[in-house]
Length: 77
Length: 205
Image (cartoon, rainbow over the protein chains, first blue to last red):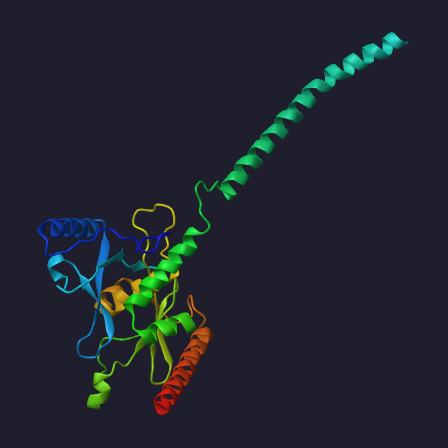
């Protein structure tokens, strides 16, 4: 998410392919280094409720995740 | 006679010249300052695209819709806010009450998050939180629906972190408590109508 733009596609690829994964990891780290938060929209297996999973490391991303959303970190308003 | 008048005119012009010169200088300075002030009030917006914010909001709504469930999306579309249940279990006496969260949040775009008790509608507090642009390029605000999605993701994934970063106040600092209570009433009416509609659909099948 980017102010003034909304959703912007940063990169995409198949994490099973080494070349793609390298690019995904690099972009993931770059976004977190820029101070963004990363979250993966998921569905709670027990309740069926939609929720998000905050990820701090590339390895935290669930294997079946289709996307990771980066957004500016929260600050007191 | 004519010569005398001419001499008097030349003398008068010579005497008036410094005054006219001073007036012209002052006038020029005033006009210049006005120009600067006007420029400061309305800076030129090079490359401003009036449709960009609207397109960004349309994309943000699609993204929000793809993340939340159908009920939450309908709630946001119809009422303009989302309800997110608190993640911390209740501390009340019965087991069922302990499992159910004793509080929930109302999430508005670009407004504080409001915590309340769903059982009796009691307003607890408002949490002022923003997701500002870190680089300060152009617009510093997320589109409205992105702001709601950011709050939703933060609350459902790491409630304590986002609440810990927010500035907490009693309800009324930024939001009108009467308006929040009206929104709670609208929400209950909306859920009642939705429940009635779904039961009618179920019985007709």
